[in-house]
Image (cartoon, rainbow, N blue to C red; front, side):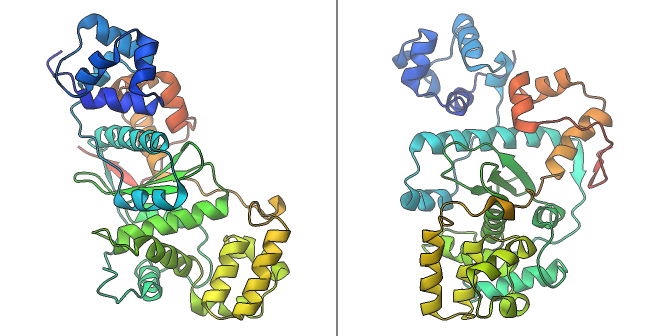
Length: 358
């Protein structure tokens, strides 16, 4: 092989499998000290060691010679971690999955151009005096979103050139993460292990970071939440729906606005459609009914699907003639990971959200 062994790929593979150095050392029979030196770039593994690492971690040997950069998690995740007590092991696994997907799509996008239909505006929250309501309104107007509920938020976000990935994040502690790196479209990673209403709010929250934040700030998580609420439930459209609301009326509004009862209640309080006293009473009602933990399943609605990332994969197979084996070789993954990460099953021809680069 002409390329040099990339120690960052070893650490990425180990974290993707949820293994510590100690656990990998036990699984391979390689001492932790030796593994540590490999990961720190002090030594390169010999052929036998590389073979063992490849087999144990279920990554082809060629993967370890990938020269892509590895990126850390954005500051918003670390801010969230302080509130939610997310274990470092969980963050490592999330970071690894995000990086692997970015590596894969950096390769795939060499052959396709995304036909971006909508502008992704940057509206600095400081310049707008922290007015997230106005920023959300501007995004809706920029995208020409019809009044009322957004029927499919993922569709709008993808049309603005953002890659959306539905992921199997561990522990259910992190709902969404945004990554914007040079040479790639912005990427939003959403946990698929959350109710559909929460996933929509998570997507709107991450969109808020892309639109409003270039630098970290202490209030960025609250600002992203406020933006998400205003984007999904605009004041002028929802106020009278929320006026003097009850738990029963909010439950009826959930499938209409595709927002949780809790999000609708919080919005009603924020917009002063109900009094603080009414709001406090209704929060207690939600708790006593068990709805703070899980809202009634009969009110659930289908999850929105990320289409663009799947279509890019399918274009390679349908239009460019890649076999599954060739796709796995290109991405540097084994069959089980290809299936679990991307779930490619459709045999339909992809629709033209992109074109082949000639």
